[in-house]
Picture 1 (spheres, rainbow, N blue to C red):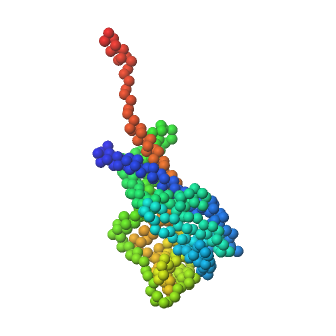
Picture 2 (picture 1 turned 120 degrees about the vertical axis):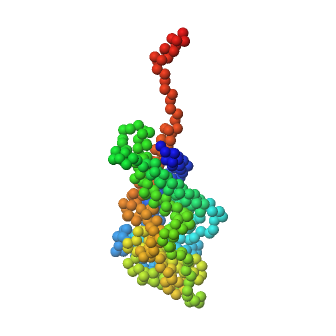
Picture 3 (picture 1 turned 180 degrees about the vertical axis):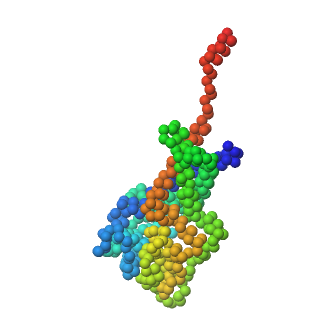
Length: 404
């Protein structure tokens, strides 16, 4: 083996040993989170599920009337102990609930996890079904999926955890690239076939080597995608300069109201109607209320054809004074660089390819555990000192005779 390839193999080995446990954790939690909404509803039917509206079927895609959204916001604003939320997530399917989010205050440390208050509201009766603290660790049924979410996205350690996960993303990128280099076989049919397959019945160390090598090749493209997207989610500044150099990105400034300060306040119903008029075929998924007086609303819409499911990625900023549209971010009509970044989330979760994509991500999420175990077996095997060859009995007896 050449010195360069030996150095790359050593780098691959130590990156796996140092970051292996964290990669296993991220893979397993990611596999579960591919089905987060379904599992959350299954664990908490009384909190997240209600009877579907009349003339609809359970699970049918739902389009919520702007007037109903206004009623929910007004109800919460008038209730003691609640007030107007920072964000209101609309039901996606018949049988889903409204979820009101109340933004947490500033944390004392970057290593402290922020906790958001979630309040669930029945769309039919406007009754408050319950609430939970999103970001607070716990193993109860309401807190289990939120805990796994924050473990996967923040290591339960706030913004400090995001830095660690960004470094882990770099390690996964290094492991994927060095793994492909180490895997590269001679360009013969037999060598390529052996590098792409593994055979049952071999000894455990040999089987571990074959499985590690072959599965590593097939998983490498997905790992490269997960690595780049994971770095981008946690430390965008590490990725956007490279993307911007290839395709200029649209400035991500926050627009302000253009209406006069005495223009009054637009009702949420008017804001949602303005957004819906721009995308009549889209589904309004959530409403962000102004953080301060004089700031605009933001409406999220999912258009048909978007790669991102659920909330979608279409954003409409609306003046909170006169309900005029200030800015539209349309993922179907973006610049190439902006579109590339908007693809990161649906590709990372697999939802861009529907159920098949989510299944693929779930299966790939199990592979870091496989690679960690097989890599550890090979490392132990190579480090184990070879037994010294035993002398033949005939040689030993000859030496005894000579000594006598």
